[in-house]
Image (cartoon, rainbow, N blue to C red; front, top):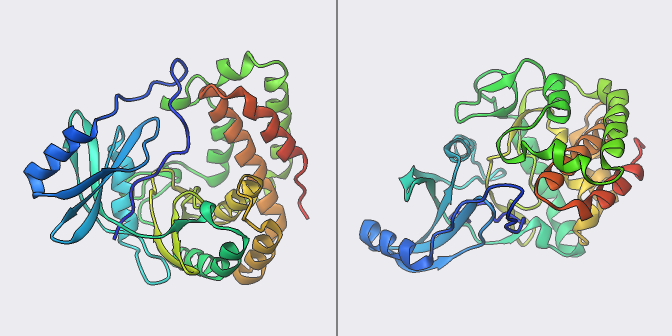
Length: 319
């Protein structure tokens, strides 16, 4: 049954990126009682742009998520069509509007998130994680195009490489449109960013034009129970592209998740998934992820993280 939405790990930060006014628990409880005769209504983690609540109807638990982007919830609906034992994606029962914002109601899923696991938990879970990623590769993503897709699988870029470059060189959209100005005011940050873009361009040729649904944020959105996948949630940031981007996202952020055995994960993924030029592609995507994170954290008003991100990128290697 569904876990909640994406418990965004970013604190609300005034002044840099506009955040939504959050709903109080009593307002949501009244709404759910009126609509569903719900009980046991509780608040789950809230983020800059979203809130999540858990509730019970007829002994079944559900999650209500509020946010500003309906497309993200429609992507969850699309991903739910791919659900299987190996790739458990919770059912989205309704997408709608209330309180001048979009919402989704999903089934609740129990479990620990990947980034909450200790080293032993990761070790026991890696086989199931790789099985889930293998199952995701067998899914035919509808629509056309590369990069972020909508609820019909349609994306705006003609090639995977064009999205990768546009994601780094563009002025940004919506929530991070201020990234360039924000990065420029941090001494040396723009120079380091531009050097990173040049470094990525040198290795981008290793990135093949593959078109698969790629989640891009599994550590914070994969629920596990005793070494099994219990639910993969929040597909709002999913893109159409090379599925090795998901592995790179896990390995790049490993130092921020002390339980994650980066070397074991990397070697197991290379062996199980069997991708050509595995090391070169993961390396390229780790560089890309570092640069995207620099943009995001600058726009979010967290310049203190930029040195950590560039230092991490400097330590990367293709082997």
